[in-house]
Every structure is written in structure tokens, then in C-alpha cells.
Image (cartoon, rainbow over all chains, first blue to last red; front, side, top):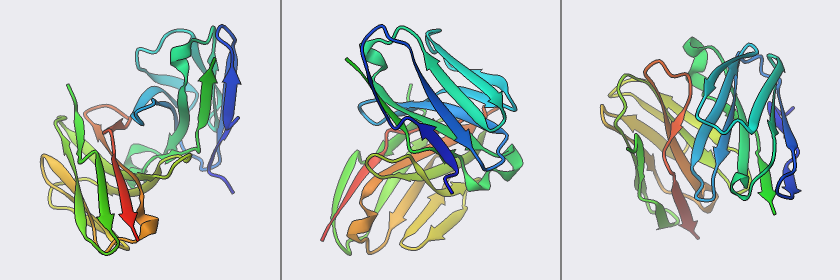
Length: 115
Length: 110
């Protein structure tokens, strides 16, 4: 039973296209995140949502628009894709602060390649 | 300004050769320091959370320790299956997010 699942796993698309990545968690966590991992393997937060409310928006271009229809889902839509958007995108979730001893749980990633 | 720095960037060890990975941080108001393992093509896998200086946690061949400025991940008698990238991250201040270091790529040679 996958805890945090993302689809698709791979995405190859042309510059200028619009694409979406979906994420679902079955852990009952309150907060969900999108992280971007660049070619040097550095992970950086993009957005976080708590119970469908946007909490963190880390100076990400407004071509990126997250949407959280409910507490268990967080999707990422990207408009007008650029070459520099090529990266691995990870969805993650975490419980309330006081129960975070088990860490944040990450999905297996979506490798986006823009050609 | 780097807030989380990991060293070394890469480490190659013979099987059974113990060593330590370092994670130093410069944030204020540390709420938690997290260690993750990441295998190629997979997401980070949670290992430990440390909250205060002096705290230690162990899991199989791994032991994590924390001081006021850094954390160490000690690997005792490693096996080839311990080969992975080890990531350190901190949660600090009023931020409910993880700030990651750049990782240490560990290779254990049989």
C-alpha cells in the first residue's frame, strides 16, 4: 500500500506545453508539499498546503500552480514549460508538528524532461 | 548563504570500513534535524529525527548524533547495500518545511 503516490513517474514534453503531476497520500497527514530536485540532486521546497490551504510558496514562477482539492491530494500544474523546468519533482506529506518524529514521507518522484 | 552543509560530497569505503558523514547547520531555532537515505530513481526514505543536542538514535549499522552546530551519521561495518545518497535536512524557526543539504553519495565496495 503506497503511502505517497505520484503520477506519472516519467514525463517527456516539448517546450511551451502545459502538464500536470498528481499526488495522493493515504497516511492521513495534514500537510503536503512539492519539492524540486535539480540535476545536482539538491532538493528544494516549492509549495506546501495544510488542509487545502496554501502555506508556503517559495518564489516559484507563477507558471507553476498547485491545487489541493482535499487533504489527501496535491496536484501541480505547469504552464508554458521551459527547458529549465527539467528536474525530478517530489511530493511529500507530514503529520502535525507535534507528531513529526516519523519525518516527512516522500513519493517516488516524477522525472520531467522538457525538450 | 548555505544553511545546511554536508561533507564529504562523496565517500567510497571498503565493506566493513566504518566512517562518519557530517551535516553542519547555521539556522536559528532548530526544531528538528532529519536524516534520509535516497537510492537512485527513488524518493528520500526517512531514517532519523533528532531534536536536541546530545540526542542519539540508532538503526542497524547507522547511528545519528546531534550537537548545537552539526550532526553526524556514523556507519559501522557497512555493507554494499548501504550504498546510497544520504541527505540531511532541518526544520527551523516558524517554518514547517525541510531545508536540505546537498547530500553525501556513499559507495561501499565489496
